[in-house]
Image (tube, rainbow, N blue to C red):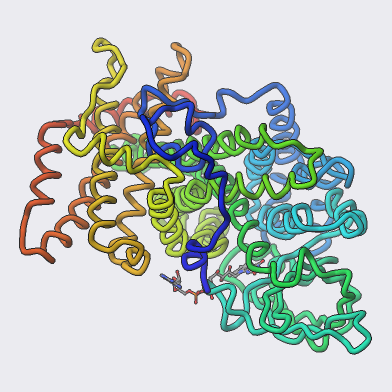
Length: 616
Ligand SMILES: Cc1cc2nc3c(=O)[nH]c(=O)nc-3n(C[C@H](O)[C@H](O)[C@H](O)COP(=O)(O)OP(=O)(O)OC[C@H]3O[C@@H](n4cnc5c(N)ncnc54)[C@H](O)[C@@H]3O)c2cc1C
């Protein structure tokens, strides 16, 4: 079973009458996952880094200080395998509270909001050690959250108090040789001993981050066919750790196989209930995804900065290569990718925090509600992961090109970044699996009426470019129309797909992939528009303007291509051109064009004032 098939039987979110029918209004969907699908640009608001509170800024400053003064000076040493140094830094992170942001205060943590947790990961990434970030992120995310959310008081006292402070390092081992993307098809078994005091685990887990260093492991095994989570102590008999994997990148992190050979786990170390392993395994991955979005977006910015430094220094044809238009074009594209990813990341954390504000920490089911809020944002979490990892991949690839031959030589650092970034499109669910989630969840939200998508389909069927409440003299009226055109196109295409395939759409991967890309583009356009529109008039807004306009132009290109791919295919099944014509008619009415080269030149002019990413 994989996450896509899980969709049909996942949790009932608060399907109160809230989403039954009636006009689409921002207040009905604010703080809900998928709100960007239905809330027009003149109605919704988004959270962004410009709205960080004083407390947020305090954590931001502390994490940045640690990154720049402690990690950055030794980042090269941390990016090669160096257990002692990695553990030393890990423990210091714990002492400073960076590992306990999500853990409750009564168990040694800080119990702060999700935005703070993202800010800490974001700023720690400035230390430029992908390896230590993978080590810390696996510990705070997929390894700690199962215990925070599902652990009982004794388990939290025993493990979490030490994990939150860095005294213990934890890992999460789900993947098996035969169970990767199909994560719940694992063959590891757990058998109760005759005296009923222990489970004996037998099987093999692979690719475990922190594998050789961890004191605690959250793992999964079948108890009479019921997938179940367990907490393992390092001293569990029969837990055998394999050799370090030789990896393409993140070489400073530990990745190993585990062999469970009658591994003896006390029954009190069952996490949650027997049979609850599936939800435990998957629910924590949503957090892993949006936080990976944050660390990769951060990486995309420091990659850009390194490339600028080099391009300003390196001279060819008697001038710095940063003066060449083709190099400048790369910088403009890099900034746009980073800003888009950053924008969607904090919209997501802010939206989750909005929903969490209504959850009472003193209630017994607090963590059940936390998970519902986070799972509700499954679409956003996958989008963050894809946008961030793609932005980093793009920027590193262009970074290598900007460095020319030096990009290929280890000493200059970009070659290491090139290898390090590659894993981000593979773990925390491959980007293919994340695209199936985006499409599948959008379909689910429409069919189950968790979001008023049906209303949107009806409202927009003959009106792809509705009246938008932005004054005519507002220079962004045209861009608002582009976003609403895209929203209408997505509604139209989703309706056509549902009519043709119904729930079986989840098996049509040729269509799911471009449809996911459409959803991603709408989320980028919608969120970037709202973020830009909310900015206070002034220098920062002026500097964001061209980046935003470029983003809209780039995303519209994607929307055109992906929409026509889907509609041409549907038309060809019916030997008609009706759907393609319908799209093209509205595209002609939109009649939007962009002076992209001038915009890019303006972006680069601003970039050279700062000589670094300037939009944070
Ligand atoms: C360095 C590293 C660290 C890791 N850390 C951990 C960890 O701490 N804990 C842990 O449990 N796991 C960890 N993993 C495992 C990681 O999560 C998996 O590698 C990942 O989920 C992909 O599984 P797989 O490697 O078996 O690839 P496969 O599932 O075999 O996928 C191979 C290809 O097929 C595609 N594919 C598979 N299914 C579908 C589908 N339904 N539709 C479309 N395409 C599909 C994939 O997208 C991919 O392109 C780590 C892996 C690495 C390399």
